[in-house]
Structure formats: structure tokens, C-alpha cells
Length: 280
Ligand SMILES: *[C@@H]1O[C@H](CO)[C@@H](O)[C@H](O)[C@H]1NC(C)=O
Ligand SMILES: *[C@@H]1O[C@H](CO)[C@@H](O)[C@H](O)[C@H]1NC(C)=O
Ligand SMILES: *[C@@H]1O[C@H](CO)[C@@H](O)[C@H](O)[C@H]1NC(C)=O
Ligand SMILES: *[C@@H]1O[C@H](CO)[C@@H](O)[C@H](O)[C@H]1NC(C)=O
Image (tube, rainbow, N blue to C red):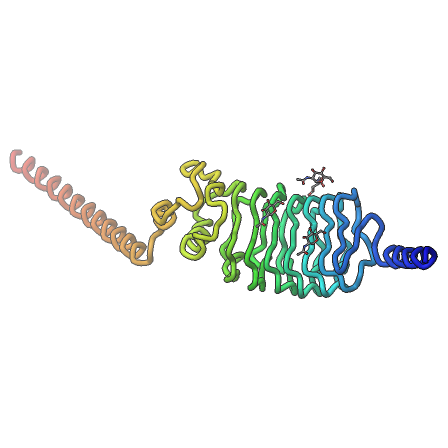
């Protein structure tokens, strides 16, 4: 009996060791490698893995193609690592990925089609990437299922409307803690936010403008049409035609005036000369 138990335990242990990377715990289709001071991603995971946590490590790089075999992956937690970029096409086979947490990393920009093929994504968390300055207009292309997008606490001063326009399922959007510059280029986005998902923005009170000076400290969502009035003081074709016409009339008038003055002066001169001759 004891022997059988021992054998069973050994077998369980061996199979566990075989299928689970060192320092990780594996259970069902879940692999938890969080908080292990890992500098690189663990190799050879279960092929049918669904939930992978690599949170709270020091991972700075993910090899290209790392996820390409894990087609069942639904949850990927990379929260609190040192990632400064992700390889192109990382998510190419991650067609079932639902939740992606990249918060507390070192990402500086999101390129176009970053999440290409991961079209089922419901939640993407990019908060607390303090150097995140740039989001490509096509970074989130195709994420029609996306419901939660967290872009808070980065270094974003601008976000184009194109980046969010297609995210028709968005329910929670966080934009707070970024140094937004609410100039004319931000008007389309803010207008869209006001009319589309005003009720969905989760951190309205934290999303503030850092510039231009006249709106420094003002809440992003308290800006109205009126705030952007100066952006629309541009001249239309009619204005240009009017200005050209006025210019033309003025120059004709001045030529005519000069001409008349010339004639008048000439006449006066002759007249006074004639007078002088008469007097003599
Ligand atoms: C995924 O795994 C993490 C730990 O690795 C756990 O905290 C989390 O609840 C799991 N999520 C789901 C939906 O099972
Ligand atoms: C990040 O992980 C480190 C351990 O690697 C931990 O000490 C630190 O508290 C974590 N930070 C956050 C914000 O969770
Ligand atoms: C973050 O990335 C920058 C380069 O983009 C690098 O200089 C810096 O060392 C990185 N910081 C960490 C904590 O990885
Ligand atoms: C994103 O992650 C941060 C910190 O890790 C957390 O506070 C925040 O609630 C998350 N956002 C969403 C929308 O889940």
C-alpha cells in the first residue's frame, strides 16, 4: 500500500516536473510564474495553456514567436516587468486571447497592428508605462470586441481619434495621469469622446490638460466646442476673394487719386503761370 502510494506520488511529481517550468506552478491549463525574479520567459509551456501569469518579474524581452504555439491562450499577465517593446506579430496565433495585462512596464510606443490577429481581446491594460508617449493610429486596429482599455499613467500628450474610432465595444476607457496637450489637434478625439462614450470613461476626474497654458489643469472632458473656437478662425475661399477684391479696388482708387492729384497740380501750376504772365 505504502509502496503504491509512493509510486503514484513519484509519477505525479515526475509528470509535474516534465510539464511545468521551474519556479512556476501549473494547474489545469493555468501556469503561474509570477514573482520569481525571472529575467526571461519560461520555455516549453503546456501546449493547451489558457492562463499564463508572468507578473512581477524582470522580463525585458520576449522572443519573437514565443506565443505562436499556444493557440488556446486566453489570459496573459505581464504586469510589472521591464518590457520596453514587444516583438512584431507576437499575437499572431493568439486568436483566443481575451485579457492582456502590460501595466507597469517600460513600453514607449505602440506600433501599428500590435495586436494583429488577437481579435477577441476584451481587456488591454497599458497603464503605468511611464515612458509611453506614442500610440500609432492603427495600434488597436481590428479589436472590435475590446471593452476595457487602460492607457492611464503614461506620458501621452496626444492621441489621434483614428486610434479609438473603431473600438465600437469600448465600455471602460482610462486616460488619466497623462500630460495631455489639449490643443486643436486633440479636438476631434475629445469631441468624439463627449458624444460617444462620455459615460464609459472611468477616470474623468483624473484626465487633465497640461497645456496649452490657457487650459492648463482643466479636465479633458470639461472642454467644449467653445474651448476650441480659436481653432476655427480660418479663412474661407469667399474671405480670400473678398480680400483680393478690396485690395484691387483700393489700388485702382489710389492710382486714380494720384492721377487726379497730378492733373490738378499741373492745372494749378499752369493757371498760376498764366496769372503771372497777365500781371506782367
Ligand atoms: C489566471 O491565473 C492567475 C494566477 O496565475 C489567477 O490569479 C487568475 O485568477 C486566473 N484567471 C482565471 C480567469 O482563471
Ligand atoms: C513589482 O514587482 C516587484 C518584484 O519583482 C515588487 O517588489 C514590486 O512591489 C512590484 N510593483 C508593483 C507596482 O506591483
Ligand atoms: C526603459 O527603457 C529605456 C529605453 O527606452 C531604458 O533606457 C531604460 O533603462 C528602461 N528602464 C527599465 C527599468 O527597464
Ligand atoms: C490596469 O492595471 C492597473 C494596475 O496594474 C489597475 O489598477 C487597473 O485597474 C487596471 N485597469 C483595468 C481597466 O482593469
